[in-house]
Amino acid sequence: MNFDPLGTDKPQHHIRCLPGDVADKVLLPGDPKRAERTAELFDDARHVASNREYATYTGTYRGMPVSVTSTGIGCPSMAIAVEELVSVGARTLIRTGTSGSMTPEVQPGEVIVGTAAIREEGTGIAYLPMEYPAVADLDMTICLRAAARELGLPVRAGVPPGSGPAPGGPGDAGQASRMDSGRGSRVGDGDLHPVYSRVHAALENRLHLHGGKLVRLGHPPDARRCGCTGRQGDHRRARCPGSGRAGCRGRPHRMTARIDVHTHFYPSSYLAALERRRDIPRVYRDGAVRRFVIFPEEHADPRIGRPIEDGWWTVAGKVGFMEENAISQSVISLGNPWLEPFEGQEAIEVAREVNNELGALEEITDGRLVGLGALPATGVDDVLAEIAAIDEHPSLRGIVTGPRITHLQLDDPELESVWDELESRNLPVLLHPQDGIGLDILEGYGHVLPVGVGFPMETTAVVSRLVFGGVLFNHPGLKIIVSHGGGTLSALVGRLDAAWRSDEIGRTRLPEPPSRSIARLYIDAITYAPGPLHASIAMVGQDRIMFGTDHPFSIEDAGAVVGAMDTIDETTQNSIFAGTASALFGLH
Image (cartoon, rainbow, N blue to C red; front, side):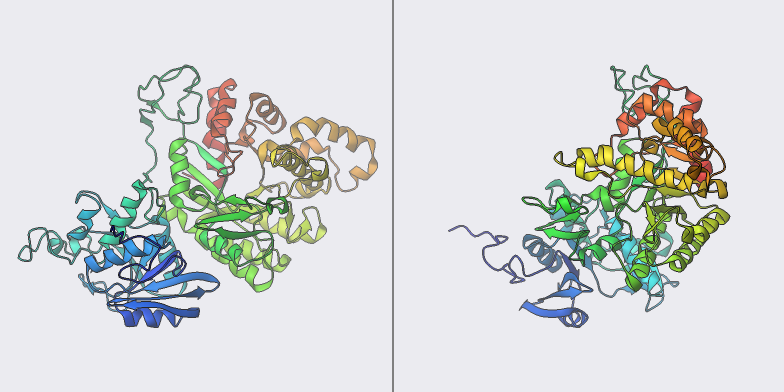
């Protein structure tokens, strides 16, 4: 008879849990009594099982399913708990507990967020060789530190050494005992290694645990080998940012900086807020996969919504995409539907959580990610208050909005104070479509026509209202960036001038030809082809076009966006790739 200790048809041998007994997020204290105390903070907590040192409770916290399992003392018992929890569905594992200070400046009562662990114990070797680093998930680390700061707790991030048996045996103090405060160790907690080692080993097996993908976060150098072979088309693909068309054939060459001004990011606090909703837009769980339902037509069988992949919400996913496409910096913004679904105090709280989370990423990524803030849809006064908070945040460089602000059309006179505030504070605004227009005649082709036609037409209509409403004329200092290559404005700018001349109603709020107001706009370069890009340059000038990708959505094609620039001169390329964005957002 064969016995599978990690089989799921019977309770796990030690923790005595079955699939469905634990949430995908599990806290891991050592003491069973601490597990019980932790469960008292849950809503609807239930005791799942107890066996030896392992006690498990499951419930919800603020609507989010969560479990807690005690692991006993030391790495071997921790490893058993982690293995068996993973077998029954756990994916995010957070070690909690107490530790001793190894340096005078770390005082009792402080919160320590472990960023990695010094591997000086025997258990982790069963997963990975000793040379492999044991590193915590970056996004989890960011969230833990941000949560502690928001609660006003004294918090530090550091690398705890091990306390398990050293490879040389009990008599060998090993490296861990020599890691004094001068070498970076702050506290001692020997139970971290099997958590970090297990999740890194899981990456090789595609278990998608929160162990993090390891990506380089430093700024790309000016000259390095880009991997371009010189084959036809290779150099034009996004991965090679060298200038010219011939291809570099792998030789070191000067790399053109790239700043992506149109790239979306969904912070974990935002996804958690959507997961609490039952109406569209919402996030729901399909087994171990979270799916995002943005539009009503996505609420259809057999698959509801779209899967939320790493690139949507993790730093590792975003920076990994940047690495693949030689992007130096990204100005990230919340995507559709922004904060429109939320009302009242919840909207204000979600706005603050989202903006703080976005704002924390600049420091974490050494400046590679900077953010645009989002605005609550709860009234002009709340919008003005959030604009002030965004402006005062050192790492937020502007705002993003859909076709409405607090449910008002952008040319609504009630928004005059908002435009005054944005202009006086010199905050750039990324303008993005939301639902598309003309959807009734675009049905039958999935997302192709709504995204390919409906979105740019909505952009065109919204910007036209801004223009004819006199917003750009009355606020010449406004810095508005129009998404998706400016919609269809470049094809219609002459027609709009003709319409303005032909009908005096059009001149009621706009005393100048529309083309003059349009020329004050900034446009992203997401045109995918040379012709539309040249038309945008002709409409607003080369110094008002900026590189973008629309990552992480499926229409993203950085290679096509880069390829469209083959027909423009190097000076204009440099301006579009980075020069204009650097000046507009104050980047360096």
